[in-house]
Length: 58
View 1 (cartoon, rainbow, N blue to C red):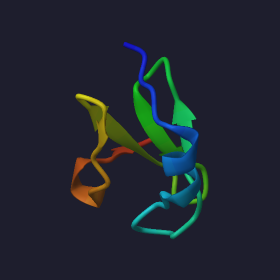
View 2: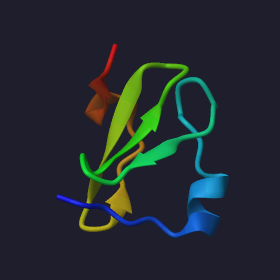
View 3: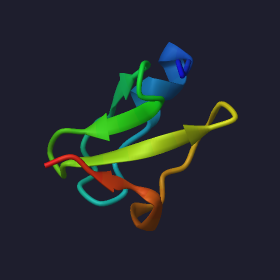
């Protein structure tokens, strides 16, 4: 699964928990926050920025 997010949108999105910037993991289809250790899913091209929906990555 590959995900695409427009660059302008990626620049303004932030992790709801840490407020840190997110990076796109296209292969996993997720937005990743290295500071909080959470990965947020992208479903049908829409980022789901809910902490309850996030996956812990570390």
